Amino acid sequence: MKQILTALLVTFAISFSVQAEEALSLTPQQTYDMVQAQGDEFLFVDVRDPVEIMFIGYTDLVDKNIPFKLADRSDFLDDKGRFAMNTNPEFAAQVENALKKKGLTKDDLVITMCRSGSSRGKPSAEYLMERGFTNVKYIDHGFQGSGAKEGKKKGMRIVNGWQNDGLPWSMKLNPEKIYRP
Image (cartoon, rainbow, N blue to C red; front, side, top):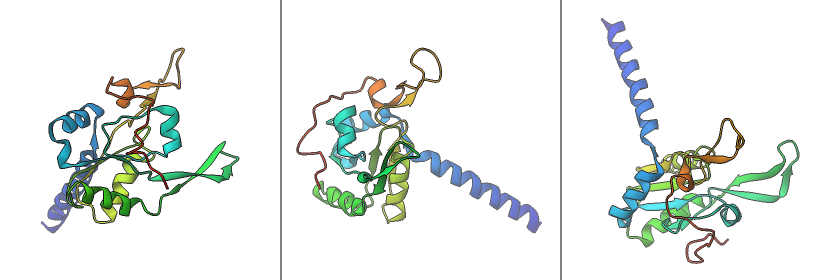
């Protein structure tokens, strides 16, 4: 009987863990709809490096650009052909400050968005949760989306994401919202 109970508890724990992880993500359209309906009730953060935003695009619907990772222009990774991306040591404090400016707390919803959703969107949401934020989600496929798997545009980011879903964006940055160290 103990073995059956233990097996059921383990199965339930694994199931709950998977559901909790899946619950972290929102589609771009869900986020857009939430901003339209209840934008004052949560914080929407673009977690990309501001230089990346400058070259890829931006939505002014975010409350603030607070980078989770910042490009370290003094550390070029030859094997990867790019600059190192280091965690912004002030990220959690800056998010908490942005919440306070909206009259919100660490228990209110925070939605993060990066370029693709996987390398900074989800990790930034998990990072905040590890630091006591209780209600954090990220936008699956982020701002720019995924690369096409085949065809003439193979590898180009033309699948899903904020831009490809036809949601509002532009190349013009809002100086009131963009991160400045």
